[in-house]
Image (cartoon, rainbow, N blue to C red; front, side, top):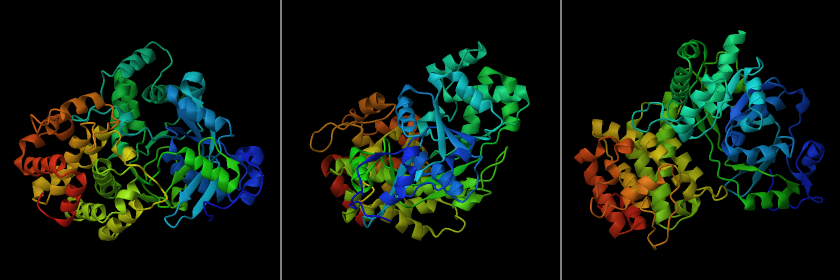
Length: 509
């Protein structure tokens, strides 16, 4: 473990295969295995920071033990924006650095070698399709965010009339190259079926309840639009294991790049930073084999759901509690909000009085201890996670992470006061103006819609929760609307900081 201020021994060097031998002397753990021995076994769509701080590190850990050398990862992208990660990885032989930031300021730094190539679909569709159809590929994994699954926010059905989906279905039916992730995976499975090649497993690593089940439904729906017989074959032959994943991975900043160079003298085009905490609970359901994940700290279980609900309803829902209230109260960084007395009390009250009562028992987990661990993680000043990151894509997050808590607790009579207030904080945030009159950049695929509705709240205070695609019928339930309206009024009159203080102390708003 090294400190962030240790001086590099020599002039800066560029990360890459030629510089591997020099890494250890500069405070970076080198992979320690011969990367030329790795062969592809996994194609991963969505090679962002989270994948590189999570699944790719697990494979790197296994490779360091001499395991899973036939499970090298090939990254894949289908969007023009993915050219950035392609260029970054190709410029340094697909190596990258991971820095784990401990709360006391110490750092753990390593170079990760488990990604062996990166293919961008638009560059050469046949190359990506050929790899996906290769028998060596036994897992296709995904971190494409909640929005990447093309799920209707209310019905949960596949959005068939999305323009990109319509175009891709037509392309595959005409024998042309696909452009979406759905098209590439479906066409690859068609080729494998035609060749008599075993189907790969589709392994979701996204923060979605029942992520494997969602992937099964969405890919199946797309395939049915293309070829119903193929869809039936996929239903019978393709495994979609569920998983719960957890590691806070903030967006890489220029300051992170500069710190890496200052501390080690190693230049990395796109380093990754993350908290030390790591959890991955994985359903043991794979059709074509899997790496020995359990040898690298993964919990391989028969049923992921209890762990998944715990994480989504405690960690992720609490993140939403910090996101909007924190931004409105003037906090840019999560740990700054957590350094106050009020936010920890507010979040503890939500988790203990509302989050936990909505859960079934979680095998092997002390939920009260888990709550305290979460609060410590949120308060880590070294991670420098932002309230803006937590507030992005709210329309995908609140309906999946917090609204189910509200419905469950309305059914059992448990408290929903804090949950309703968090919903109200989203509504206030979505107005796009902070308490000082400054513009808020609302990042959401429905930005125009939610902002327009939020700005009508003075005339109709329930306007925001009348959006049934996000809130179902909550606008018609007094058990929800009463605390919601109280919290929204408090946000407009008292402000976010005082509203959080009162909620944390259990005072009337």
